[in-house]
Length: 366
Image 1 (cartoon, rainbow, N blue to C red):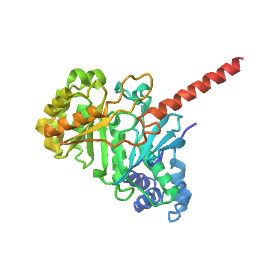
Image 2 (cartoon, one colour):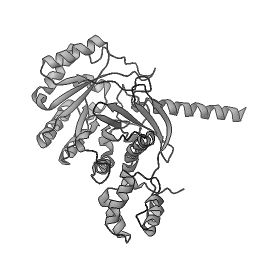
Image 3 (cartoon, one colour):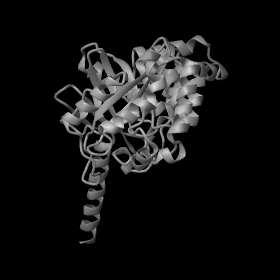
Image 4 (tube, rainbow, N blue to C red):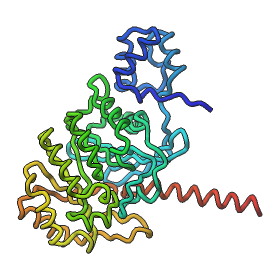
């Protein structure tokens, strides 16, 4: 069965061009966006100040919502993890987190992940496909819909692109997403309230720098030398630290914007004073524009053997970096009483589905 594309995949410029091409006035695009992103209607028929012909035209060519909620887990700290089902049956995760500065949503960019970080639940299941720009936008819209239904007048204020997948491996669709959510006529989420995380695709860091956006960049570093980083992140074979840091230098000179370096602390792997000193040396020349986010590890499952660093080791690592003049902090944890690790809920749900299928097959053969 043919499915209609989601209207959330169009920037306002693209929607304007499409409407004009189909005989409509340019101003209709602004009206449609107002209904989609500010009034947040779920049917084209609800756009009452738009003429019937235009509503029918949109209805014939586009869908508004293509994601459905499969599972919702709520934490005691207010974190909510959503498992959404796509039109093709694939599952993705989206997380709403409460901070003192507002409500942040972590979005997914791919169905599965091919980067293969050895500590990550997302990489347990290989990449099936990229998400469309619309499917990334719809994650925000569905979370905002939940907030609207709760009825406390809250809105999504911040976005982190750190969910399942490598955002820079889906660069074009990620950029469409950024342009849509940042547009002042729509959700108007400020660029400085958006952070994109990459595992270190150096060639895409150059491209991202050339976009000249105010969007924040975070790099998943997790090790201060090539031997260790290759051991836990296979992407380092293609983009070793020398190439990665050259791209970082280009980004900093081009944008003069601070970069966050994510560093997951793994017990007896990368959490020693030696690694802290190596990390300080690696970032020494750019320390004025670098921030290190130290992340206590969330154990994933029995197939991944890493353990969380002891609190004493985390504190010692932090103090060593501070002593070397590196700006750093330990990330506050969210959703520790639910499936907190990225990809964990999705992996569990897929495993459940497989068990159900096996049981149904056994029953049929009995």
